[in-house]
Image (cartoon, rainbow, N blue to C red):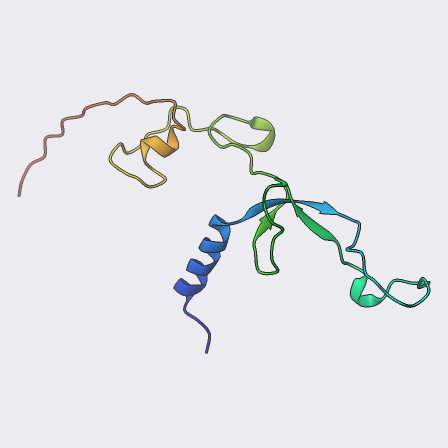
Length: 123
């Protein structure tokens, strides 16, 4: 039986939150063999390469770790080349801690608050 969509999503989110930046090294790990130098690379070693942590103080990723090669672009500032509109001038919710919240959406720049009074008729 397949796991629930929620449990798969939670597992992916946990891995995403713990993802680490890596660099690719084309030099395979040294292997010790007692045979003469092979003429061709064995199939199992053909695509073997090293993922090394971008920060040398971090440990190398495991086989189930989520990794990335480049940091994502910033979405706070406008970047027409990448099609990023930025967040300046957008409406936010100052009581929310989610993605629509002012603290996150305004990227620490601060924000203006407007007070609106709405009069509605009751039925």
